[in-house]
Length: 136
Image 1: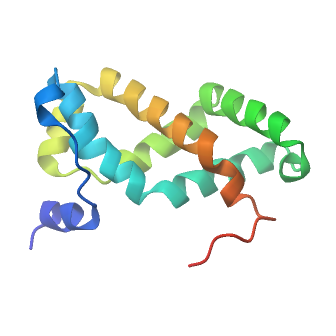
Image 2 (image 1 turned 90 degrees about the vertical axis):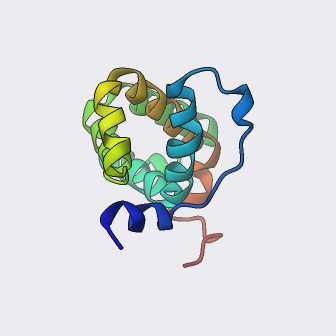
């Protein structure tokens, strides 16, 4: 089994209506990015929260409305965090996906960031250190 096959085996197959896909980048989003982000969900959330708590140690004890606002601000503005999260996602591309990404990296990076921001915005409360709802 080669590296690309191993990477693909990590991903859950997410159903989507291919006939409604209008562009190759949109197809890439549904076929590649969504399964990778689903697989990395806990990791991306925990890394983001850890990054924010290093900047603001009181983040976890703040009001949830304040937390969400801070989170979105940092996810949009902190280039170090954006690069780290993006690198984690790109690291799970197969060779053919990486080739496609390299030809379209600007548009795909924008989509990756939008998708990560939305995932984290809607789920971060589940990953705060004082929230014991997760189990390994």
